Amino acid sequence: MDNLLPIANPILSTPFEFTTPKYDYPGQISPLPYFHNQYKPPKDILNFECCDIDFFQRESSQYKTFHELHNNATLIYQRFINQTPKGQNFASPKYIGTKLFSKGPIHFDSNFECGNLYTVHRVGNKKYNLILHNDTQTNGCTRWYFFSVRTPERTMLQFNIINLSKSASYLNVNPYIYTARTGWYRGGDNVQYYKNNYKKNKDTNYYTLSFSYLFEKEDITYFSLFPPYGLSSLSQFLIPFQNLPFFKLKSITTNLGNQCPVITMGDSSKPLIVILSRQHPSEVISSYVIEGIIQYLVNEDAQNLRQQFYFKILPMMNPDGVIHGNSITTLQGIDINQKWHKVNKLIPSAQHVKALLKKAQNLHLVLDIHQTFKKYGIKFVGIHNQNQPFISAIQQTCQYVNINQSKFGKSSKMERTLPFALGNILQFSNIFQMRISNQDENGKDFSVENLQQIGVNICQAINLMNTPELIKEFPKINQQIDISDSESCSSCDENSYNKKRVIKRKLTTINPGNENNISIATTTTTKKSFLPSKLKPLCDLSQYQTSNKKSVQSSQFKTRIRSFSTRAPDIQLKH
Image (tube, rainbow, N blue to C red; front, side, top):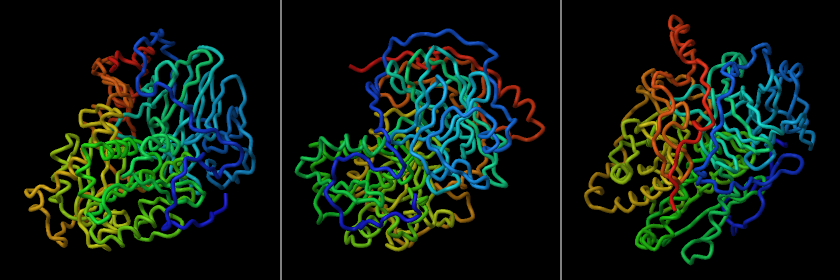
């Protein structure tokens, strides 16, 4: 892949065309798999017996580097033939081939839209080490994974994803799993997340996500950080609205030739509201929030809102990164979220947004939607204090907002992000980054309906901003709170989370499975506890004091074998 792709003209938007995504990878890439019955898993799930209690073990530490693992362990799967110099990061190959390499009866695959799995090595009996692709043209940024596995017989396998770059999270780390029988749900047995011995650089280690799963014969099973939402998914969602008279759909052409959709609704003479998401490809849930916003705005009940405001929505700022299975960056290795102070032609979508905001005569609200992997609920980041009309309104319309976790004011760590970089340039205060977790404060996973409802709540808050009571709370533009000396908001940069402390009390409240519900499913679930309350969540032992390490090891990494029935609790389908 060349370092400089052809430069697109981001200012002249063109009609959106529903075409096949374009790739910079060699060879033929399959489209995003169609997941039928995606949001309604069947109720009659088979109950499988428990497996050998001694099956699970942490991955072998006999290999010190990825190159050593690759040269000595049995290679089962490799997405691309490559030539990787010994001094280069193993997961950032130079693509020179067009074939997938697959060996053995167990078939791995990630050669589809949003897919991310680079190599698979067998390191023991039914034990496999998996390595993810780094984001293109980077030596890191490994969070997103999405791949499928098919086995010729019913068997239990253990997978270790060994090059994750993020530290332990308070949130559920269980993978999302899809089969034709179940739909998407959080699952996996014996799930552990811990720091391993593989070095990312001189001072930083990678992390391992280990889990086991019981496969059925010839059953294709997908595993993902979250149920994938690609450019194809967005296109299918937008098709029913394209002929609406008030719904204008155009696109910005990316450097690779893909289309970044730009949705316009409302009266251009009215105050402008700009909403954008998916700067980071792995932040899937923001797409469902955008769906909720669009579904509300095209409804007849929103006619008054469309008459009062002029909406510009960019639901996928980084389509190239989404298509290629990146976690954070564009195809050129650029983190858009950290480049708003210096936007250039390599980021056509951001260049378009910046030009739009500078040109706007009557700017009312700018909302940049992200997903947080470290906090519960919803929090906001803004350059000015929290007594803004939109913040006051969203607290009344959305029950998941946690204003205590939100950060408002000056912050050197956030100066390159949209609220700070453009907020200062435009001298505009009603500009926010909205960070949405995949779980509420009770540790319960958000369903798709919950996420879409958050989008509806955003629209309701915009409507509520027009009330006189809230307008009076609008502060003077230059009234700011300096938070540089306080705990700053963690930016979406790859290195920002490493200095965070692990709060022990919160760690003990993580649900290690889908204990309360099936996530990403529009179903009503029956709360049912499957695990003893004494079982502690999985965490990074390095966060604890050395004196407590032995006791923590004995309790945290106790083998937990659960039957298949614990991965799919009883549910009640909505008819």
